[in-house]
Amino acid sequence: MGAAILTDLLTEILIPVAAVVGIGFALVQWGLVSRVKLSPEKQGPPAGSNNKNDYSDYLIEEEEGLNDHNIVVKCADIQRAISEGATSFLFTEYQYVGIFMVAFAILVFLFLGSVEGFSTKSQPCTYSKDKYCKPALANAIFSTVSFLLGAITSLVSGFLGMKIATYANARTTLETRKDSAIQ
Image (tube, rainbow, N blue to C red):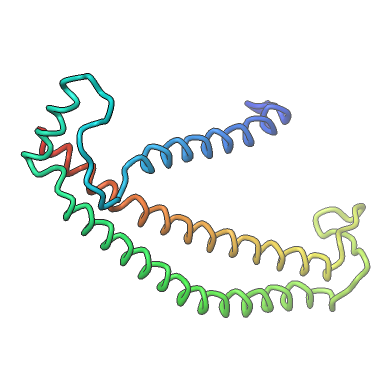
């Protein structure tokens, strides 16, 4: 075999750094999307601004219908309804997924544990007779826990993804409306 491209130490550093950079990028994007407000309050030109362009930009937005607060209110209502429906759907789906997870966790435990009759003593490894492998019961327990952690992580990721999508949906619509009307 050839030499590794990255050393073990560099790999152990690079993976968490990449995760932190990804989380940081997600937080920056969340901050940008959060700036778009879905509030029904009517806003006038910026207060305390002596810049003539701020006032004229506000008037242009009013004239072109970009600041139509009925649309903002409607988008907020639609976003709330979509978010409520998505949450309801996910909780219903998670009831079925929970049953599936428990059933397959039991199967994983039973199949892996029964290999050596739910033995608690180490056995010689099949790939190397001079080494001893963990007992079948330990293998069954750790594999079942790994399966459940993976399934729960998947569920949480799906839930967060749906929440993010519904959170950003109306805000993206309003911003796209502004951008397309200006051009």
